[in-house]
Length: 130
Length: 101
Image (cartoon, rainbow over all chains, first blue to last red):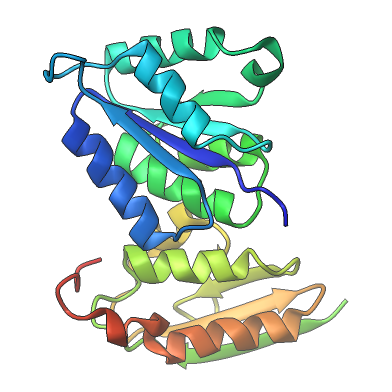
C-alpha cells in the first residue's frame, strides 16, 4: 500500500491541537497518520521543540509530513524541529502557511488520496488569503 | 477518452457542508478522470477534487447537483459520486448531533 503523507498539528493549546486532530480523524479517517502537540512542559500555553519532533516521528510517513501551526512560536519551533531532524528526513517535512484547523482537515483530505507532500501543502495553502 | 454527465438532488440536511464535501472530494480524487460539478446545468463548473472550491459553492439542501467527467472511467466516476449523494453521504448512521458538520 502507498503511504499517505502524515499530518502534525502544533498549537499553543493542547486542547486546540487535540481537537483539530479529532476533526481530522472523524472527517477524513484513519488512513492518514495524524499527531498533535501543544502546551509547554509546565502545563501552560506554548510549544516545545522536543514535543514537535516526537509528533513528527509519530505521524511519520516516507511520503512526508505536513505541519500545521497556529501563532508565532508554533511556527518557529516547528521550523527548528525540522532543522534538528536527520538530513535525509528534513526534506520530507514542511510547515504549511494555512489556518491550523481548516488546514489540517483539508491537508488530510488531500493526503488521503495519496497526493504528494507538495500537493498537500499547496491545497492547505489555498485557504490562506492570497 | 470517455465523457459522462449526470445530475441528482442534494437532500443532505446541511447542504454541501464540510463533511459531505470532504467525502465527495476524497471519492472524486480516487478517479483519474477530470470531474466537475455545478448547481446549474450551464455552470460555472467547479473542480470536484478541490475541497476549498467545492465548499465555497455553499450548495444548500434542495440544490440539483450536476456532474460531468471526462477521461479514464468517467462514467464510473460520475455514477459513484451520484450514488454517494443519493446515499446522503452515508451519514444517516452518524446521527444528528453533528448535523452542522
